[in-house]
Length: 525
Image 1: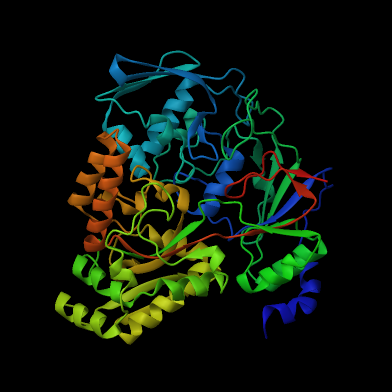
Image 2 (image 1 turned 30 degrees about the horizontal axis):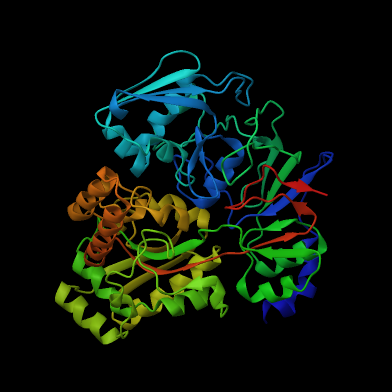
């Protein structure tokens, strides 16, 4: 039965959404996230749903605007001295945490220290930092080994971002989840109303001090909470979510299924719009620490078996305006994107070649554990295609279909499959982080110190260092071409394409900013 034929019968199911037994505030936005909030600490977990949660609860020192440029956010301003090796940063006045305590420079220092141990770009900043200290209650200071002009970009990046939390919480090791959500963002997390797998609740923080002046732009500018309450309702079934949106049971659905978009677009009370301008970029990600994919030749063998067109149609349907099937390692259309080496993906597809290359690489029938979060539709669709390829070329595949809450903790396991580890999974990343080698963390070759998958490539890292030291856009673009050419050899992942994921929301929501789901500046009539 197709989803659109199922809508009428699922309207009744939508009406069963449980609401907490408290009086509803004047203005409540009910949101359907892409997946359940399985982890709440945005330093501990890299999941995009955790990032979106984090932007409700925490604020940033700097925030990217619509042009992906960092702007002061919690910061009043900064002074750069000593030929770029000394940064003195001053916090805005009046900043408060949700527990009523003031935001102090030592909180910012502790938060940066925690984040920079976990994030790939943060580790680079940490490596060039001689000293980071609080000078006074509102002033902290970096002393650097060499100039680092990308410091605001690093502290303001929107994914795997640096959340500012009280020093007492920021002292938690980054591999241990902070479970007490005390931020200084425009909303408070209401832990007492959390229902795992079903509900997360946020309320307006009346003590939040927005930036004065300026224009709201993505993560920059004044962040004003106009609504009193935000409820996240996890609805894994697409038909139920669509019915809930049509009946007004919910206001906003983050990732409507492609086959339901025409139906939703016909509704005068619903808007369908792709607000995240960078979109998403898909991948097949290997565990490069464990056999058989610790061998780059083994990873490289699968390039001839991946047809990006098939993956994009599986994820987003036949509307070509929503996807790009000529995708390398940088966001298509961005200044650093190129088609360098792309013929490995656009040439003739051949499973026979994959078989030959696997044999030449030394594959001996080892069991391959493939983790699949079935409640994330795009990842489920890509996984089914990838699994079909693996099986057809003779891979001994252990296809583990699980929910996202089970997959997420498994992904951080670096051990063997006998110890609960994994070999491959499908993932997607925000396109905005793939505009530059500075922020494209999944292209790093840092080994065990890098993000999930842990590929190692001394050549990619050396080229990235050249990029970071260059101030010439022409030279940087050439370096990015060389990085992409090297990536086709080392294969930190296989790109499956890029796409724009529309939101579906009721027309009484206004003021929605560009980007992933942001709840400040949002109004509900």
